Length: 261
Length: 283
Image (tube, rainbow over all chains, first blue to last red; front, side, top):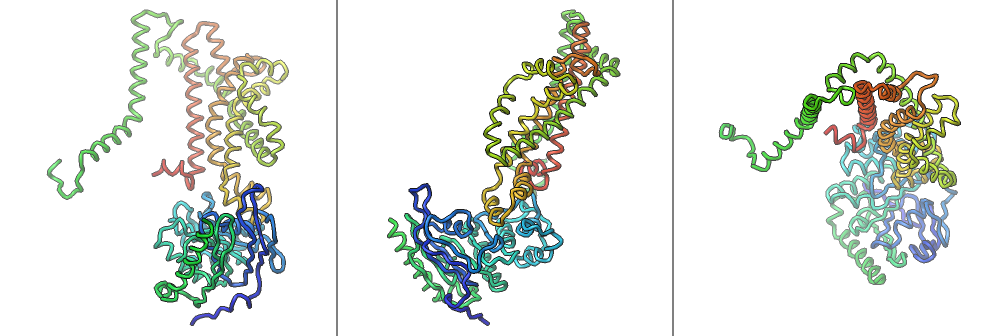
């Protein structure tokens, strides 16, 4: 059974970026005039070449840097726990076990391990690593480390998960597997994701909305809807629908590259 | 040996050479220094005998060993005094070094104000400062501790500071995103990140606090307190008791090695589960 997902406009709003711009050092314009409305349950990919401001956009949303222009508003105000983040590297604490790493977001909110033991276990089960509860990160493969990182990002069930090219450093086979697993996860817990990538195929496979961006200055070129229903599986990867979306995204990306050059 | 095992994977010349080198490395690491020591002692002994050097100028190694055994009661007591100062200085160096490092990373203002003076203290030779210290510090134990601490605290301070500042940038961002307090960031991120660096500094500080303790005692002489090894060496020198000087010197050197080995072991135990430096040794 496919789950019908309402068009973006009808979903409750989580976050809105209004004409956001960011200039570093007064001269380097990393992002210009970006507007984006994130609805609950959206899976949005920011797709573009290097230097198009994708990562800057994520850092702005995460409040790690402040916008030079415009504003970012969370529906109903923002709390520190509203966000989960997955970086390009697994970014685990090497001195802590897998479970302790996943515990971190709770720990920083003053919750003891016994109090959230079940949540930590559940998150590890969702990424298929329950058996590695007490392992240290160095004992895991690259893909497994990334799963721990994903478990940590979603253990608190945040309103929004930011992913900054999380699978870019992995091999293709692991990447496909993690793409599939990420969608399964999304189906199960209904999280909202903003996913930065420079892979057309990854963005089409995962997202229901693709924001194509261009560089110098970083800006939004086009927004594409991928209206194929979830769950998507390997059959979707070979469908003509998928191919058509990839063509459209590639064309938009070419425009972006052309305009940038 | 060559034709009897055809089932084994073929070992080519390069592989054979590599294995031979590895075996040489493994055995040689222990046997070669022992052989070098034995040869050195033998040469020393022969030089003394052949040149008929009197024992108050250069004793034979055997005599040094005899003295070490004969004077054990005096020397061991002196060793305990020196060791006590060394370990206390090391403890204070750790507290002071880590304390200052934490303070420096918490406040840029404090770091900028005081870091240059920490460097100045470090680069000024302790022999030059020690006489002054003993003019102003009445308590001899406190004076000795201060000298040893001055020598030993800097590696702990600079290594720990480096470690506290080298926490992973993405992890720092993550802590910020989760709204971590300053204390949480220090406790859960910076201190664990600094541990390997701190332990590296600690190993250096262990040797330095011994040096500091010995040098300080040289300068301070004895007075009120029981005598340490440095004083025993000076005293033996005045009396031309050269064998005892050698015996005391050996004790100091052995102490230094034991401290270094002990701290290396501690470092290995603390890091073996997760840090690269400890993993290589296991594997």
